[in-house]
Image (cartoon, one colour):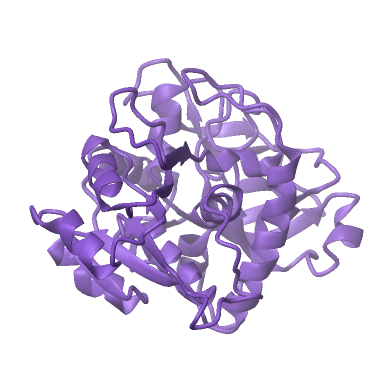
Length: 363
C-alpha cells in the first residue's frame, strides 16, 4: 500500500504553555514501523487531561500531541503477525500512545496516521461504534491496570473474579470522571465492591456504571460516612483527582489498619501522612516499557515489566468488552470535525470546561 509523504498532526510549536500547539500539514509519517507496531489511519480521537498537561509541562517542539484514538490498521510491523495474528490490515482498533513525548516526536494520536504498539491495542467489537471505540481508547485502561496490579495488588481480575465472600471494597475518588467510571466497571468485573466519591450531580452516573454506593465530597461528613459504611476496614483507595483536598479525604476514610492509596498525579510534598498508609502514584505512559525522559518527578527508567502487565491486561479487557461488560463514559461528539476542532477541545480540557462527558472528535 502506498502512503502519503506526510501526515496532518497537532504538534508542539513553541515553549509557551497554553499556546504551544498548532495543526501541521506536513508532519512526518511514522515510518518505518518498529517490529511491534501497527500503522493506523485515524478515524476519531478522544481527549484526556494529559493532552493539555503533557505539552504544557514538557513542551518539545515538533512532538505530536494526543493519546487515545480509534481507526483502521493499514500496515503492520514485522513481528505483529506472530505476536498478534488477529491484528491485520483492515482491522478496526482503538488504543493509546504517549503523546507530546520529548523522546519520540512521532508518537501522538492527534494525527491522520498513528504508529501504535500492538500490545496496547484492542479490536473494536462488531457492535461498537467509532465514537465509543475512541472513548474507550486505552489511556484509562493502561493506568488502571498499573493501579490494580502494580500498586493495589487487588489479587482478582475479570478472568479470575473474587467470590462474594472474597470481595472487598475499593474506594474510587473521582467516580464521576471518565477514568472513574471505567475503574468502577473493571473493579465490578473483577468481583470487587467499587465505592465512588463524587459530586451529588454525578452520583446517579457512578451508580449506573456499577458503583455499590456513592459519597458526596462536598459533605462535611463524607469520610465519616465512608468509614461507617466500610466498618473501618477500607484498605484500597484510587484517587483519580489527586489534589490536596482529595488526598486529605482519602487518608481520613482509610480504615484503622491502613492500606494502599494510589493517585494518578504527582503527589504534593505537603500532604497528610499516616504511618500505616502506603502512598503511590501512577504514570500510565510506563506501559510502553520505555524510559520517560521527563523531569520534575515524572521521569521514569524503562519498565519492561509494565509492558508485560499491560499486554496481559489489554487482552483481558478485550474479552470482557466483547461480552458487553464495559462501556465508555458518556460521549460528547465535537460539533466540528478535524484537528482544528481537536485543538479547541484541548483548550476546553485545559479550562476544565468538560464535566460528565468524554470529548470525541472525528477527523
